[in-house]
Length: 230
Image (cartoon, rainbow, N blue to C red; front, side, top):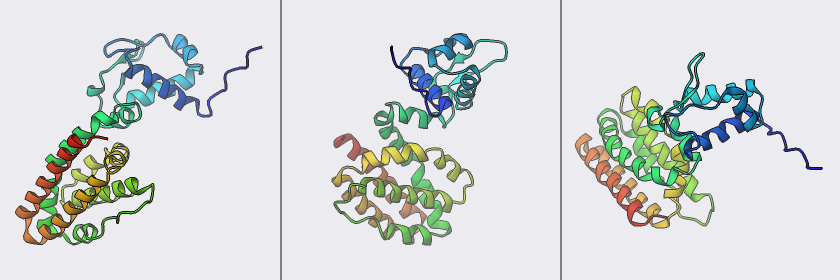
């Protein structure tokens, strides 16, 4: 007799992940509608209340349009909000997102650094003074990514723009994954230490100097990714 399929420990998350995989692989393409609730629940091996929970989560994240009394419509990921990023990063899209993240960073971070330099650069400057040292620690890429994320967070918070930390925070999960990939390369880590030293020196010189250095170092990071892709 065939052994029964194990019941997932967290059925709603299982249903959500399976549905998301189907959305991203084209099983349910943008503009289509999902099968009837009973059929869909059976295909996922979950109850209808569990399916509804998964659908609500995907709807909240901008991947589905749930309409009372009508079929659930599949949205294009681009129609969703920033919460879609975390989903995409977990399902094979992360490598393609890294250059876009670096490009967005080059557009926003220099302005935040300039505003921080103008208002109060002390906390940011203190942080930049002590980047992680090179070592054989297998977790060094994650450590470096956490340091770089803290740098960006301090710049966003120091800018005085109330929306800057909120916007940056939407990328937290994606950046944790992408940063570990980027900083897995020792050359990129070495160049980033040079970037931190340059920014540390530029902050006391005022907003214009700090912004110029932040922009050039951000663009250099993008070029490093394109030239030395893992």
